[in-house]
Length: 353
Image (cartoon, one colour):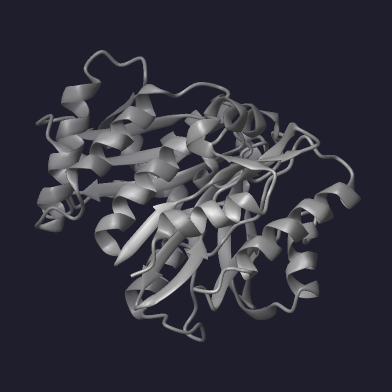
């Protein structure tokens, strides 16, 4: 098998950069400097990248996070979350085990400079002899495709069918959001507020250790097994503890039955300073027939609005014409779409040498 560390060092050597682990302060400054109206995936948070590396080390044959702070003229220009991993026998690049996302360059305003840095980044990856191809992506939102998409296509990229994603724009008023979400969801949310005790746990909660263990236990019981290594749960708890405006927030939503106090549902949400995400949840549907997930979503969306988060990425929306789509996946997407205010395509572009 290839020495991933040597490949990473070869890529670093072709760029003006520092590994994220050696310059986390600059990474966090770049993250905080990105405009609050910009969609920024949770895979730009250093703590999330640590979590994803731990998760995929158990899921893939090989993987190594090689995310970096990009420099220009000796000064930090931006951040780039990159992982090298082997899946199905093939070595490739991505972002946290998913398609490769773009460098974010908040300290490089001119398009010419951005294009030069992106070009150098792609050249460095395409020069690695062990990697034949890698898949890139970008969620195309209100401002259209970025310099990243343009450069990918200029360098011979092949556009694949897009994946549709649903979002909620939390800068809208409560009334505007209510007007856009599905009518049946409004009814379920109102019932949930009457039927359940609702509580949020975050970095200020003194009983976070006990609560997080209860969340972990419920997830394992509902799944019928431990679904991933303990270290990933430990990292997720620490992500909650380190919540702050410059790094983003993480919190748990707990729903308990008012009569018995039993936990009916729990969910973990994560944000960058700009965008929020639905990470993992567990609902005990065997004992609670009343809707639970709807009120969890509503409570989380309101908390993110309070924190000034603009975009809530609810998830992918698959249809029966999409490759690999199946009934359960489409049903989950339909459920998520019920909370959305916007519908955007995630462009996928295949890159080869």
